[in-house]
Length: 294
Image (cartoon, rainbow, N blue to C red):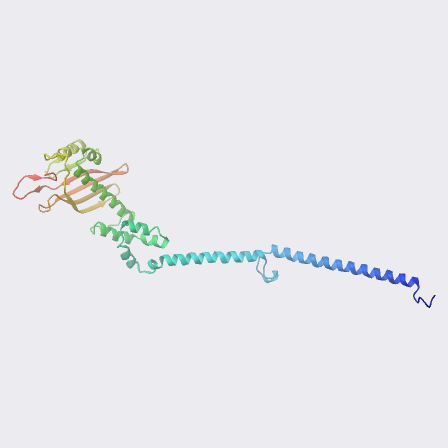
């Protein structure tokens, strides 16, 4: 029996037990190593998530660092794009000599200059330039006020002059229409208002002035008919609450003009006339005075 089976049962059991023990030790060692690796990898991931820097000690930076870098690049790109847009929109005006810019803008009218100021920031700066509005004022109104310095700038002064010129034009529309009601509203109701018609007569006080216009509107037998005349050489000077306008009125271009002066005061948000003065017109061969109505 010993010859047929060289290993005893005891030897086999010992070998089997040793093998099983080795297997158990191997499994335990493998489990320990694997757990340590997984835990280490998890710690590294957690560190990368919590690290917001882009330093080399963190493996070149984590997601937060990349996001920050991308955000900074995006902001920088937007700034460059905005700068490029401003440069494209305003480069022509910004790169010109200021005197040339002012001269170029002087060819625009009031409406065009206002619209230009609403395009972009560069055009707004150019269109709001005081020199441009001074040039436009001289083109549309007069060169007589070249040496004045408006308190609120030439843009504001242009708008105020434009408003009073329109009010003055309304005065002559009332005369053409011979509307006593409109003329009564046009004058300031005060005792110091004065009116000198082309006849040379002076009327003082609101009631007397309105009555004088009632007589003027019925000067000829065709009362109620419109009056044909032309207004030229209009010049206006505007202060904060007072303005005066000078002009020439032509009934007959061959007979010469009536020289007129209108004075206005600003009350309750609107302009009122307080003084009207017309020169006396003497016709050739006729010593008597005349006015706009014949």
